[in-house]
Length: 226
Figure 1 (cartoon, rainbow, N blue to C red):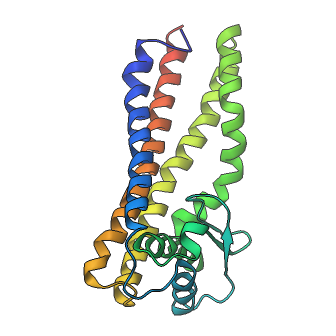
Figure 2 (tube, helix red, strand yellow; figure 1 turned 90 degrees about the horizontal axis):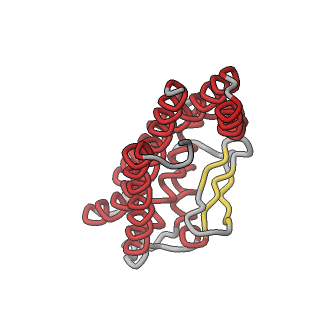
């Protein structure tokens, strides 16, 4: 059965549990560190702007964006967008998240290969992920092997995108912590607090990758079970 079976419990439930735990972990860590003010008193926006200047990046604008934990770097428009809980806040969480997003801007400037690859794959992966499951389900229902195979191939592209995202995110966090420490933005006893937020955020990407890989395994098993 496609929609629910013992296979789903074995493959997908653990991944779903990890995803839910990761979401709880990042919200918990961010909430806790949002209550701890950084000694420097710098806001997330100020840290981001300072780090951009420090790394010789003058063509990236820092701007506020609505939403909770909606922070991201837009490499197409060269915008570093920070949520309200980060942009104007001076907490350890805000400083850590701002530095992480700046890490992506630094990656962009240095043409970090995984980031470049992810950026080029995004349109294809996004298109493929929308079509993969409908084609697979239609093929499974009507026993059209060609549609099943096309759906799996498209889904493989989406899986690869989640996997290439891992080094991009880990590297951005690594750059962030190095910049914050070397630049004196955080004191030695503050580093671990900011790192907890970034480590929790990284877990969400690990969970997404695990879910995608296990879903792919599920599709392959279904394809070969006919």
